[in-house]
Image 1 (cartoon, rainbow, N blue to C red):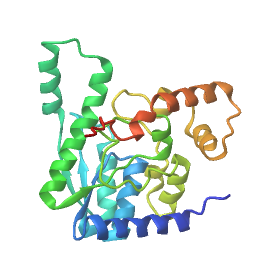
Image 2: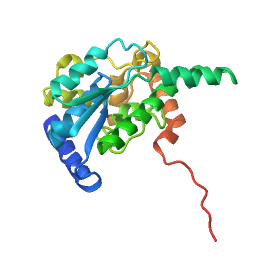
Image 3: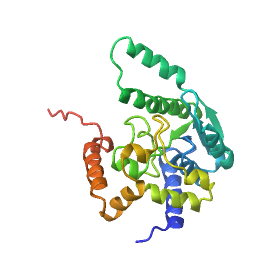
Image 4: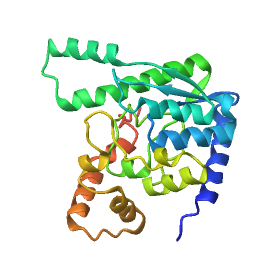
Length: 244
């Protein structure tokens, strides 16, 4: 079945309107703006659903961000209010204190930044009467390419059931600058693109998710392995069920 970007875009806008009517009446949408396609599309959907005066963009570099101009361009293009919060001081302070007591792993370093950014987003949201809008997509979630309680957190998630390929089509439907919509995804933490880190392309992943077909056996093995290992990220925290 062919993806109807126009129809899905309108459905996503209607969904956001309903979510805010039910769970955030009168609140603002607070979006972390990375300069990539996901946050750009989410912010644009929120503007269409709520109006630009109810959307706030938050830029959160960790020291120097090479493509910070893209993040600013998103806010300028959409005409939304923005805040810039540099997390470097907090990031360096925590790592410095950890390093004095335990060996700090590379994964700890990588995941600390997204978790600090989510803390900053909630601080902004609670200060402006807002809701934090998650920017994760189905492709990333499928293989666990997110940080639990970091970029995987939020109040509403308009893109979580849409693949990267589909989000690009929505971005085009929204009339967003093409260079932002087609920009190669990267976490901004390791110096590598998402596809370099994952070991397969998003095109192959998206096709596998939607059709169940993956002609490349190496890709299929990697995708299946990551999906199985990271299912816990999409589930609620297990809780002991006390019974009297």
